[in-house]
Image 1 (tube, rainbow, N blue to C red):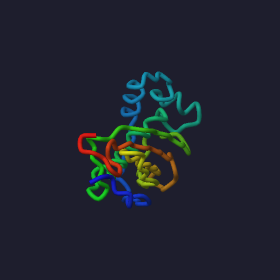
Image 2: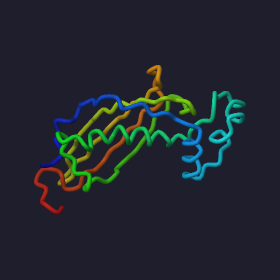
Image 3: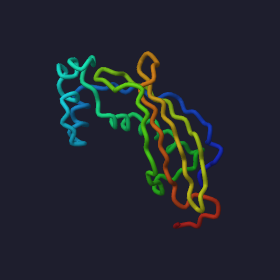
Image 4: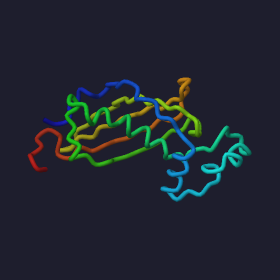
Length: 155
């Protein structure tokens, strides 16, 4: 079975809340080699008008990928994770992610496209804070190799 094109337009339930802590922000900043004091020093962040340290913009991927996993594990989607490669990732930030945020993500499957033997699944994850205010929109495309019409086993 290949990727089910009927998942296009599907919206999955909101993810469990993700609590953003200072230590997580610091660890993520170190992992991406960002030494900006806004990611480590609450006083530096407050001096710039933020309530606490802010996350590097790409920290949103942690929340988005947890939400994206819903379509990967959905048996109706027909996605074989062993055949998945990451195609594209984009973020639209509505405001910085700040230590203390409690984020909830909602997954939308925007498109399923077949190109040759491969299927491309484009998703959008809307990340909001505890009040429901938008924080980040994460758009992603995965390629499921050999999953399109006429795919041969082992492709």
